[in-house]
Image (spheres, one colour):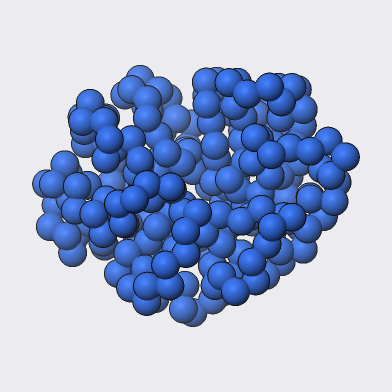
Length: 222
């Protein structure tokens, strides 16, 4: 593994990249080698929640399911927030049960996500994906033990440079999500912002991966 892509919706099958491909319970592609699976708050269907959680639990037992998610909270959608919280907590319970990290989607609900982590005493790694906020929010997340993943907004918003530079090297990941740029381009930008050689940045990300994703799969470890 030369590159680790924490969150993507597009599988490229590049042998140099370990891609954590986002999957949904009702639209599962068994050909994807490594993936996360979860109920995104946008796609909560009330009469399907139990069935989706059952599928997720079955997949979490497999070694190539590296994480649960993306899942989380979003205050800018019409899905009732109380329902979002219930579905999120159900997935956190599974993450804790199967000792899998959580890829978190969070929009305008950082305090609630932090509160739930504390209240449920979640000890598995929780990674906020697609971070776009300021240093104050980042520092609060770091204080509460979260990891932070950068991609789309790091590429598109130069104002995030200082925020990213101040993230400790042992607490961040990089991703592509849905952007056109590939993960190598995100690494190049991150290297310049962090003033690290490309090899050193790859080592940083690799170490963070090993800390968060404790998998028995030898290919994923490499």
